Image (cartoon, rainbow, N blue to C red; front, side, top):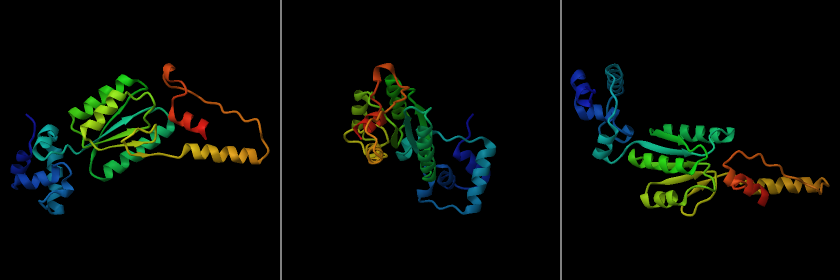
Length: 211
């Protein structure tokens, strides 16, 4: 039998709302204030008894799951790992948990990942480095779901805010520099590791060529 917040409250001789204020989703915004020493006792007791929150019950009760969804593209690239790492740190600093998945360069992976995010009732969604082959059916589903979504790097999608490096401008400046040194025959070599049918569609490649 799973341990409940009521079990912990009885063990400590305190109210269930006090336990919920410590263990509930996004507890820093709870209206119930708990002393620091009592908070430590609740956390210690919960750990000792093996308490695990019931996500669905919490989401139904307060409308919040306390989770942010990550859908990552090209997770084996070092720069992609660094983007995800720093984004994850920022999410944890705001007392949210992560539900993350890597699409492994496959459109069907995006569909499965987003459906999982919906089932888990994520409160927000972060697309990390989305590629041009992102399924448009899933994009429409994301926009109609009303879940707040932000794209971190990757291709630009209408209606989705994005944070990214200006790769085009960087390449433009680099090209200007080489021309200024007197070079006139320039070549650009691209190392490609995506799906065979998506050649030259990765956003950094397109942006660098344009720059």
